[in-house]
Length: 138
Image (cartoon, rainbow, N blue to C red):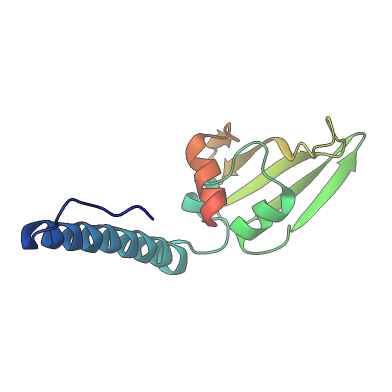
């Protein structure tokens, strides 16, 4: 059995406790922030905040989770299908691939948002932040 021969004085023990307390406080604050964001800041539906969360490669079930409901309609073409969600001031239409590439579902391949006033947004590429959000369930 190996024993530590370095004596820990009172100062070193307090420092260790302080470090542990700081790490614990950091972890608690991060989880609190995630919970608050999840419960209060993300309303379901076709909202500007939810539209910004959409990106290429998302699966249809994930888009439905962001929108807070199943699609309002859709149509199928050869090799893919389109799904759309509508609100009074905008509509979202996303193209999903129906083929598999190397055993993987391609998810959303294209799409965009049309606003009542005439503005449009294209579906953006996935970023590292999107991957992190997916992992933590945001």
